[in-house]
Length: 347
Ligand code: ATP
Ligand code: MG
Ligand code: MG
Image (cartoon, rainbow, N blue to C red):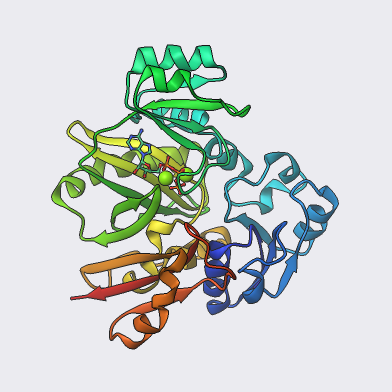
């Protein structure tokens, strides 16, 4: 056993802490937000701003290893944590938290991305739309999640009418994909890599709605190439822990969308659907323990997110046979807020 520090106190931290507890580890979460869902299940909780270097130093001093469940932790203050204690490394976070860097990084490893261009001004945007065409999606380079910080652009005229935020942006050509999937892997301290099966992901309003196994054949055919890229990315980063890469399955093979240097919503099904969950294997990897078996328990899996008022179905879900309910202990059920999820696995 020992103490694991988790930067970020959302549902991912909460599920990490629950998995850690099962194999004898305590968790200490750090989050600027006092009503954090992970705090309920962690032995200790530090509520301080990301920029508070003293608080972060103290936090790291109380933990044997430190990890993160939120990819927008600023990299600067992380320098106060001894690198030999931080998994995955600050470098992985740095690459993944900037869409421009992550796309360039994936390309450097031989991956294909949507056509993209850096946008820092209206002139850049007009040039990008001229070069890449429409429709396209303008995204903030940093801080976006669940489709926030994204604008779909249908025409050059529409682009000209936008009021650009001051943040750095990237314009992406629209990818006409057949389906979406993710590759989730775990990499140990010794470099061993294991993959979970790739679920088919369906998004609604920019938010993951369902992850389903087995995926359609078009996905199954593209998983090997996508895995190869994900493993190269992990190895180039000297990655330790769970790494998630999102892909579009297209006519011309897999297109890399983005990565998350952490456990992923599209891997929540692994709690009941795989022999070892993404949460437990992340703990095993960062703690230098042997990795667990990632194989499926049963061939069919469906994970459905409970977003906003979907949470009102909780009692119905509890009453239904074969459904596993997970609630994140969040207060208010605002529209677009991930409140929980439900998983079904069957033969
Ligand atoms: P997450 O919550 O997964 O971190 P995010 O806010 O980072 O989401 P993206 O993954 O970039 O957002 O986009 C969300 C969804 O929007 C994608 O899963 C996909 O369905 C659609 N999308 C994003 N970019 C493109 C694109 N270039 N072409 C077509 N669809 C896209
Ligand atoms: Mg994202
Ligand atoms: Mg995404």
